[in-house]
Image 1 (tube, rainbow, N blue to C red):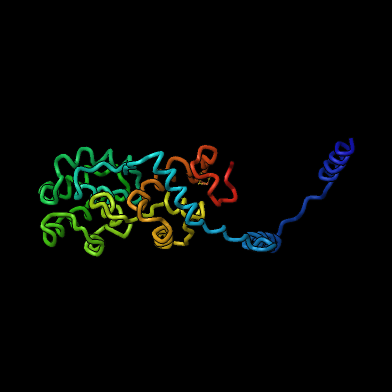
Image 2: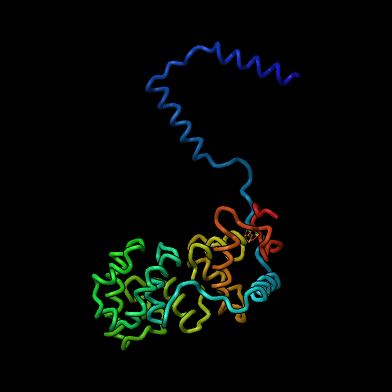
Length: 262
Ligand code: SF4
């Protein structure tokens, strides 16, 4: 009853209120104070950083990932180390599904750098035109194929520096190739892995490199080879950016995210 009364009163007051004149200076004042309120830091103590995972918890988490999926696989289709290198280079700012769709027609006719060069840049550009930044990526594919022939006898090198010296190949691409083509225990931090590392508190970091080094430090050797795929798949299908599926998450009891829905 009391609520109803006060609602009616405030409505009446609003209707009777005189219109407010808006001047340039009043608008300026409002926008300045609105902007100030947006940048104002929240009052109160800073939230505490999550408690670091213990070694036992890390082993527990990866034991669960391994039991659920003993041989995790990447989702980029490829025929050999060379086509893997090309596929990963094409996947920057694109989905694996989008890259696979484009390379399904390309790789069967160009599975070596020599064949790619023979095909020509126009053909490659046309084959990958459904992928973002395709013009630049086609140029890079041609340039990296040329360099592979000149410097590495047409083979993908098993060496980080040599890989990163190729056009369009950064640390993440090199890590994927070293891991998938050569079985090295590298951890390639993509957008999913970056989120999972930070959200769970497993390896918080402001940059992909910080997260990568943090994960390298805490993951025991026996899990390192597959850790990158377990965490990427976890981020892609369970710990999604907008609506993480905490209720079915294998590690929800270990996760440090204060907003987890369990
Ligand atoms: S509990 Fe939720 S937030 Fe934590 S890892 Fe699982 S899905 Fe992600």
